[in-house]
Image 1: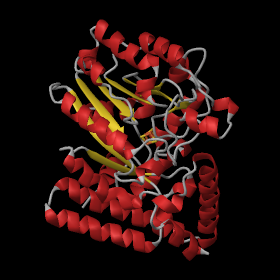
Image 2 (image 1 turned 90 degrees about the horizontal axis):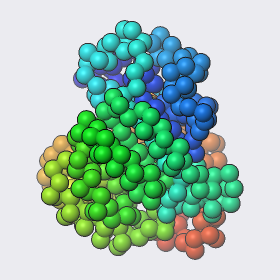
Image 3 (image 1 turned 180 degrees about the vertical axis):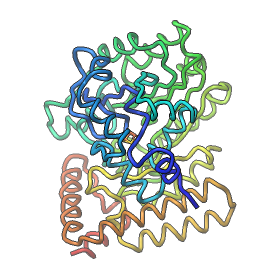
Image 4 (image 1 turned 120 degrees about the vertical axis):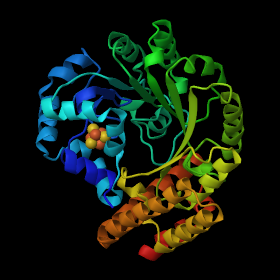
Length: 401
Ligand code: SF4
């Protein structure tokens, strides 16, 4: 059966993607991205004008040329990797944002037209998740004493750019830092509603879920469609370790309120996203069970960490994957359904990552050593021991040595 990746490769080529032709995207510290998943392009976009970069920068021209010619674009390695593992990627997902004829036109003519914004307003965040870094969380920057990244604030800059490029925008996405803690977030919603542009825009927010945003729901409902994805990387006490200093008990209370309050708004859609890494592989099915208790079983998205490399899920022992697979099969049998099948497909992606890591034992040991150094650092700073929260951690470190 042909995969979404096969279909795109057959119709276009192995590297073409619409994002560099249609989207302005920035990282939380102000670097130009091609989309939220790509590596930074190496252009600081903080000044003077991001449109100039987007339309005229030679680096962007070269990336587009390579994409049209089917040449590899190094900034997009993550899509290449995930397509090899699962036949799907962010690329195959975003190509569906536009009609086939529109994508064909871009491919055939190389037309560059700004249609979407993917803006981060800075690094302010109240969590220090284990797979995150100082360039995305001010709390991590503070913990790691990273002066350069401590509270990068792009609020005014981003809002200016949004106002300048608002006409013609049909997609808007933002993440953080934590967007709900950043003043430009609410101002952006108000701006689009006041200008009567919200009705044309599908808006996506990725939040860490620690802020009850019920008061913003009336504004959000003014948009054509408003998706809010809540990051949830564990559904038991492991949460308290992997999303420190967040706690499962608090997040559960907020989830329940948000789910209840959102029911009256027809344009708001809630989602829950898990990023699976070496310390939460055992949570994949647990999160699904938890979402069923919220009535959100069809709103679960799973992805895996590639970077930093010492957080890759394939570092776990084979037994952890076997147990997860057995759990996923059991879960699927209880009530067969498409979303449960997706979990089984995801286990296959984790096995691909496991096999790749185990093809080089020396490098695997280096990654595990780096992970151990990180957990020692977190123990000193956060007063939490990974061995108290992640049941297979000790065996994983012992077995490889
Ligand atoms: S190929 Fe992937 S990483 Fe590159 S721009 Fe498209 S979606 Fe982003």
